[in-house]
Image 1 (cartoon, one colour):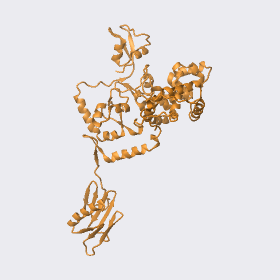
Image 2 (spheres, helix red, strand yellow; image 1 turned 45 degrees about the vertical axis):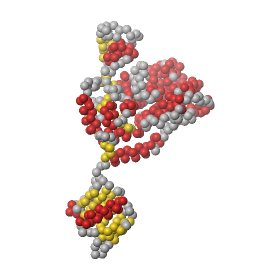
Image 3 (cartoon, one colour; image 1 turned 30 degrees about the horizontal axis):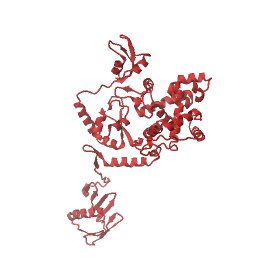
Image 4 (spheres, one colour; image 1 turned 60 degrees about the vertical axis):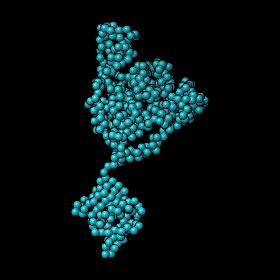
Length: 496
C-alpha cells in the first residue's frame, strides 16, 4: 500500500474515533460507519465519498482531508488540524511549511530549498554551451611533452585568412608571424595548457564586459599577452594586474590603490577600466590594431611611427618605426589568438581542474573580514580565496565607508555564507578582539609625496618604508644611479 495512504488511514482512525466515525481499511478502501455505509475508493491519488463525509486529496507530498467540516493537513514536515469554527469562509487557507535546514559543518546551517535551487541552476549551466567553450581534457603526462608540430605554411595562411575574415583585426600572413607561432607551438605548449585552464574562469568575465563596451571579443587574448592571466602580475616598470595598468593610468580610470586593496588586480574593475581605455584609443585611431599598439606604448609613440612611415596607418607599415617592445606586441597577440582558436587542431589541451566562472558569486561585505576567518568558518581553502579575490593585498577585506568591497566565493560556499552571515561577523569580531597587534590602518594611495632624505638613508631603506621598489623611486625621480644626498627631496607615490 502506498506509504502516504497508510499514514492517512492511521491518522484518520485516531481522529475519527474522537468524532464517532469508525474506519476499517480494506486494501485501498475505507469503510465508514453510517446508515448507508458508503465506500470510499482511492483513484489516481484522490479519495472521495458519495456523501462527502470524508474528502481527501493526496498531492505534492501533502495529504489533506475533511471530516465533519474540520480540515486536517498532513505533509512530510507537519500535521495541522483546523477546526471549522476557526475557518474564515471568505479567505483561503494558506499552508506554510517550516523551512528545512541542512548542516554545513559543526557550527553552520543552510536552507535546503535554497541549496536545491543552487544545485539545479548549476546543473543547467554545466549542460549549457558556457561549459563547452574550453573542454579539452589533458592526459596525466601530456603537459610535459615538448613534441614539435610541423605546421604547413599553406595551412597556416588559410587559417590566418579565416581569422582575418571574422575579426576586425588585420591578420595577414608574414614570415615573422609564422616564426612566432611555430616557436610557441614548439616551446610553449605546456604554458598554453596552463593558460587554457585559467581562461576557463577569466574569459567569460572578460567577454561580458567587452560586449558591454562593444569591443571585439577577441580582445580577451590581450590579457594573456599582458599578464598571462595572472591578476597579481607586476612588471619591472610597476604596471600591475591582468591588464597591466601603471598607477597613474589606473588612477585615470578610477582604479584605487590603498594599504589593503589594489584595484588594478581586481578582475572586474580592471577589465572595465581596460575596456574604457581601449574604447578611448579606438576613438582616436579608428583602428583596432593601432589601438592595441597605443595600449602598449602610448598614443604618442604610435603617432610618431605614423609620421616616420610617411603617413601610413597600417600596423605592418609603421611597425619598423615603433619601439622594440611594441614591434613584437601585435605579432604576439595574433599568435596567441591563433593558437587558442586552433588549440584542438594542435592538440593543446587544458586541465579540467580550474573553477568555471559561472560556479562563483559575489557579495558585498558588512564588516572587515580576513581570509583566515572565512576559512575557519566556511572551510574554504585560502588559496581559492586568494585566486578569486586577488585585489586584497593582505588577505584582508576592509570595510570602509563609501567603498563597496566585495567577496567572491564558489556557489557552494556562498549559500552557507549568506545563511550564516551574522554569525560569521560575530566570530570575526571576537577574533579581532583577541588580536594583540592591531591590523594596519587603511590608507589610500593618492597624490605624490615629497620625501626629504635624512642622514643614513639609502634607496632600499626608503623603498621599504613606503612599500615601493627602488626601480620605481629611480623612475619617478629620473635617477640613473642609486646615489642620493642628504637634504635632497624625492618624489614618491607610497603604498603605505
